[in-house]
Amino acid sequence: MIALELKDLRKNFGKTEIIRGANLQVQAGERVAIIGPNGAGKSTLFNLISGRFAPTSGEIWLGENRIDGKKPFEINRLGLSRSFQITNIFPKLSVFENLRCAVLWKLGYKYTFFKFLANLDDANELAERLMEQIRLDKKRDVLAINLTYAEQRALEIGITIAGGADVILLDEPTAGMSKSETKRFIQLIREVTVGKTLLTVEHDMGVVFGLADKIAVVVYGEVIAFDTPEAVRANARVQEAYLGSHVAEHQAAAA
Image (spheres, helix red, strand yellow):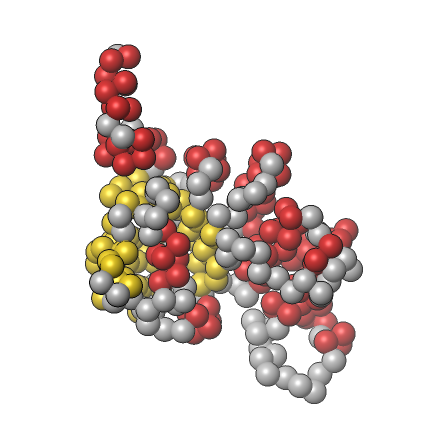
């Protein structure tokens, strides 16, 4: 079953073509890392998929729903959620309050102005469970602004999954973390995305090879390879795109 599909996707900014006919087909439950050189168009792809940008042409399908051109909140309600490179949380609310806000729409409260949040047992219980999932239950009443950087990123992951989306987009989730924090965070991502489809933009190759089932390589706005980590690692075109043809020459000389 296809969870997400890009068909000849293109995006121009003025006369500059950033995404040049990108094609990608992600199966339900796959963990996919999107990699590529700086300026390759990775973040633009995420912005197109999540509705921040409208494509110039092409199609984006979320399951059986065509979503290109829809607004971000519409796409979210169809089952796709994303995090951002810059941590996006409510800094002056506690960990618990952040998560409780994130689950309200899922539970059907929507624009409810005549209920006390403290009395919403289902929302409170779900927020408590999410806190345990992201391992911040001991920080329940700490304001988000007072969390460590890694804890803030974990909270954002919690907010991202709170709505119950089946497709999760994480934009450089481990950027700025130490090696030990990164190792713990990879395990956290694995745990909270079980049964979901995951796409992540990531520059740390250790994270990529430790997390992804498949890797999509984006160069100059095109997906030049989409395969298992082992196959991508051995792909001569990928090696050249990242490091230049001297890599292939060096390998041939070593052999």
